[in-house]
Length: 380
Image (tube, rainbow, N blue to C red; front, side, top):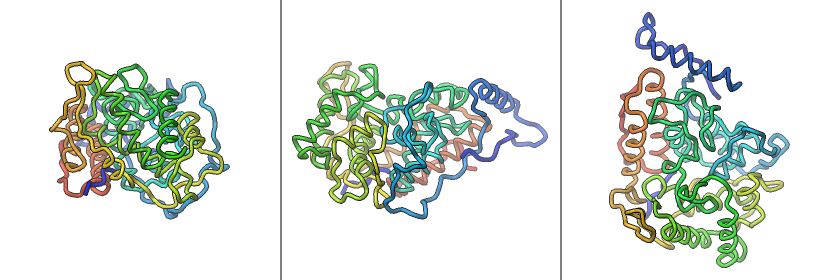
């Protein structure tokens, strides 16, 4: 049996170090830098002590989410959007800030309210993204590319580059986004959507269902192997690619329907227009990666990538995590984080410790409870 993979700003800080009498001078400078950046962008940037992730909502049934409180609005100058049609839609309806920048806790609340995503799965996915692509000092994450709206840059090699950063959460062989090798990994791709529609017609009688998902996932892998000399399908991307294939069925199908089939008008609304279909109801129960096993088993595929800068030169990577080796995924994520933050100090170190704690809580519940928690920066 394949294991299931996956799966508010608060109190302001004065940034004191270990002694109240002797503040850490580097932290004081960092606070000044954050506040100056906030004055330039209009957003009040201050170092934030990240709150604990939201708990599950009281009501977890189907409900109207394209409602009067969350009208769709077109993008304004400066708004950011990225490779995830779900987050794009939530921003365009105001479930998170319409500019596309929010805290992880706000994002967890949004995916629970807007899509009825299961709490621990939401925490796992959100804090994975935040650790790799967010600003851990200001507790802000862009759903698109890098933006000054998340605050000053963290120390290199960290980047706070947002969800569009290639090779962390976003990756190759996307369903309606091109590979980063070809120059644009985040915009809606009409050619790929046409393929999405074609496969839905051929295998799903005009609807996207589990059968279509399995066939299209395998075909997109073949496309990238044949055209992208830098194609990579390992570790985090191996998991998220199959997760995105089933995401559409679990979260983009109106919650009042029982057939779990996505029609093309609704798909176009989410993918292209970043908009809930009219009168859209969320899922009738909390969901995560249900159906992933079915998709994977249609065309089992091992992780790997093209090598030597050549197309059609796919080589399996035996060191990559698979659905049978969840703890390897945990190790890979930790190693990535340690590479981004080799020597954190002060508030950054404190926030890293807290965010890793939040991430592990989500990971252990949504993916695997067999992986021992690790503390690369100590415990708080």
